[in-house]
Length: 128
Image 1 (cartoon, rainbow, N blue to C red):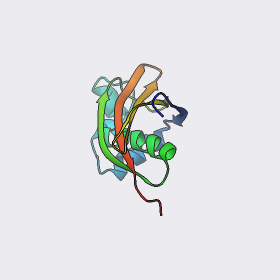
Image 2: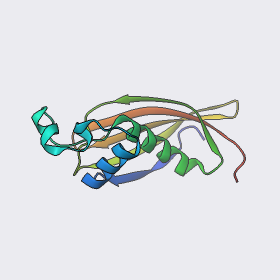
Image 3: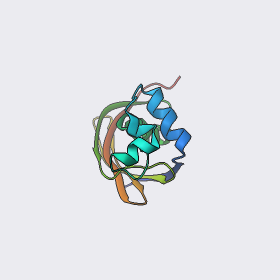
């Protein structure tokens, strides 16, 4: 299983997606929903919040691993912003498998470069 490549996942970062996910995570910081304010603060546009990025990283791995996967650890490093209007593409590789746990190295990239790099460790529990 080490070395297995996960299929890519591409997500269109529409303004609606960026805004709705920020609001769903109760992140009311204006740079995630107010374009004019985000630009006034030096950003190109509104951008994903960290909770959304974390959720998308987890989704990427659990979609591949299946409904029995239980996340045990996640280590995410943020890179460039993921702006509305861009496309976020995830790729991943299994890097470790021991004692019933599997670790996947994940890369989420946008047009500016790496938005997030992560290692997600999970175990297979019972599926429902």
